[in-house]
Length: 317
Image (cartoon, rainbow, N blue to C red; front, side):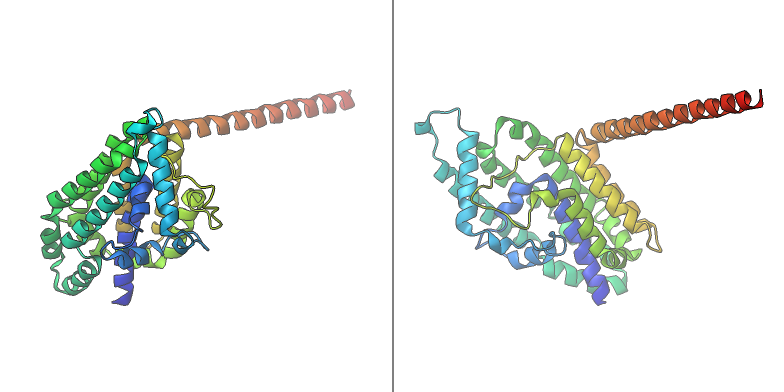
């Protein structure tokens, strides 16, 4: 039972990690104090943080300064008299607390996992997921309310990506609640939690390789800035590398269904963004580069072979 519970936490943590890749600023806000049930989220994220990284190294004052700095930068084109970065930062902090309270009121992570464990032997997983999926509209409203407060502190480029990011998060919620949680119930029934639990260290390594540079273990907070909230070529490539790494490990489990479901989750992200085009272009470029190298090797081999034949012919003459 303990393995299943840990595996269920791993799946939830993987969903959190994926959403976090798309919305890192929200993740930063979730670390502010007074947010309900933050301990559970910290425990989940701890599974996949790069080795040696500790959120405790960053104080509340550091986060406030970074966020206020971002608000100032996003509104740099406006007259200073029209921008109150401190007020904008405070609004986001308060909205972050409301977001956590709202989500925790809809689904307490610990309670959900306990209910899943109790329902699994009875074959009642659909009952558990249906109960929580009926609350999906309220969850969407929670996220919409938070996003509206966040917008004034986003740059023009970030705002252009914001609609895509919101759509991706919405699709991930749809994935979790597809047919009232049918996919997640199938994942649990097909030994998915055990598969993820077995590969939790590998998944952590995949996350560190793909996104570790966003969370350096030795962070100089005095010189740090909050990252741009965009999903550009680099981020799409990193997300695809993370997906390939995770799926490759999960495919070694005795049942292929868990890896297929996790891969489908990533496809939701690619479908709702331009990431699929980016991934296709990168794959094509890599293939062409390999082809050029292969062609060069082939030409070198042909030339070398011709030289040897000529040399042998001259010797025989």
